[in-house]
Image 1 (cartoon, helix red, strand yellow):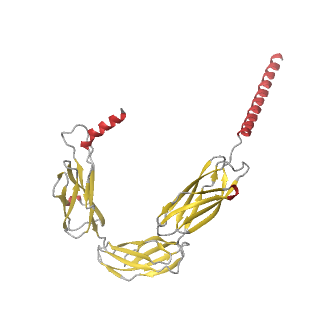
Image 2 (cartoon, rainbow, N blue to C red):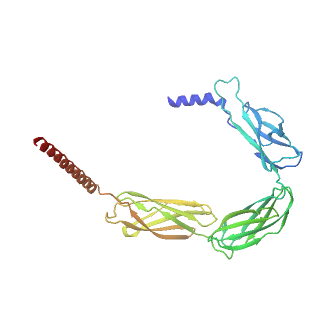
Image 3 (spheres, rainbow, N blue to C red):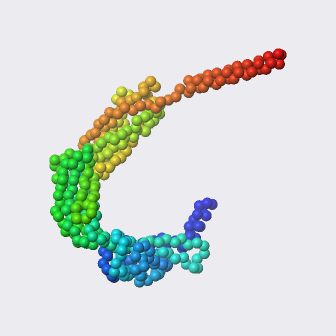
Length: 373
C-alpha cells in the first residue's frame, strides 16, 4: 500500500518539476576598461513547455540588461553589459545570470522552483603595481624531469616586469635547487605562463616542495608553492590490523600505498603465520599512481592456544613482479575472566553487607543500653 501511495505522488508531482535545467557556457571572464560595452550569450536548456524567467544578480548587476526576460523551453539569453568609466573597488567582480522555473498558474499545489546560473567575471585592476602567482607541477618517476608551470597575473593598472625564481626543497625541508626564470614583461590585467623542466636525475624518490617567488616592483612579492612526488616502483605497507579475537574468524586489513606514478594492476598480499600453519591470500586491487588502498583477508584463530598473547605475522605484498615483505606483531584482545570479576564483586558486596550489619547492631545495642539506664 505504501509503495502505491509513493508512485501516485510521484506521478502527480512530475508536471511540477523540471527534469533538465542547464546553461552553456558556464561563464565568461573579461578585463575592465572604461565605458566597456560587451554582450555575453548564454543558452539555457529547459524541458519543452517549461516556463522560465531570466534574472541577473551579484556585482555590477545595475550595469546589465537582458535581451529577453522569459523562456518557454530551451533558448538563448543575451546579457548586455555597459560599464561606467571607473569602478573604485578593484578585484574580480562576479555577475550571475540565471533562469528560474515558473509555476504554471493552472497547476494546483506548490510547484518546485529550481534555477541554474551562468557567470560573468570582470577583473578590475588595482592601483599601481599588483600581481598574483600560482605554480603547477606534476608527479613523475624518479629520474624523469618534472614539468613546472608558473602562472603570473598582473592585476594592477601598471605594466610590470616579473623576475621569478623557484626553490626546491626535499622531505627534510632542505633547499636542494634554486631556479631563476627569465624576466618577463606583463601588461596590465594580463596573465603569462612560464614553463620550466626540472631534471631529477640527481634526486631520489620521495616528496618535494617547490616555492615560487615573483618580484615585480610592487610593495610585496607574489608567492605560491606546490608539492610534488618522485616515484619508484614500490608499494609501501602503511599499517595492518593490530588486534585479534580468539576462537573466531578474524578480518585482517592491510593498508598499502603505491610510490609509483603509473597504474599498478593485480596488487595483492600473501599473509602467513608459519608457527600455526596459517596461510591466506587477499583479493587483488588495481592502484592508480600514488594511490592508497586496503587489502582484506580472513582467517580462523580457533587452533591457536589460549595462552598465546601475540603472533608474528608475515605480510608479503605482490605487484609488477616485485614484493614488499614485512613481519608485524599482532596481539590478542585482552579478555576479562568473568568468574574472577564476579567473585571480586561478590566479596565486595558481602563485605559491605557485613559492615552495614555491624553498624546496625551497634546502633541497636546503644539504644538498648540507654533504655535500661
